[in-house]
Amino acid sequence: QVQLVESGGTSVQAGGSLTLSCAAAGDTYSTIVLAWFRQGPGKTREGVALIAGGGIRYYADDVKGRFTISRDNAKNTVYLQMDDLKPNDTAKYYCAADRSFPYTRWRLPSVYEYWGQGTQVTVSS
Figure (tube, rainbow, N blue to C red):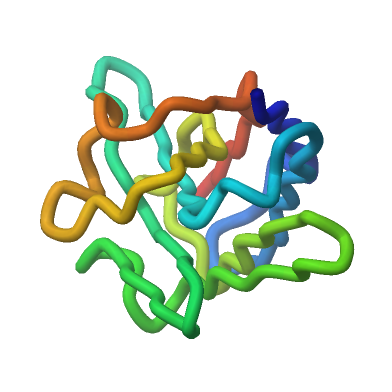
């Protein structure tokens, strides 16, 4: 079992920056993939960024160049640095983890076994 706890969500102005954290606990040695998802009002949950062993990082097209995912293995924590935030980034952000690499299916929530409870990010114009 893996437990994930997100933090760092808050309200910010458009153009601002924010860093989300996701602390993992439990059977973390078997977790090889960590990802951030988000779900905006009236929208489906979608993958935002993924990080895996060997420095593999994937990003959704609409966040490339603005968001950066990183991982501190010593702290079992994954981060999402979000810059130049836009009102469309408003969503509840979730941390997800799985033992298998999802390849092209990485943005599908159904691929991931473990989930956090989410943290709300609100971007105002």
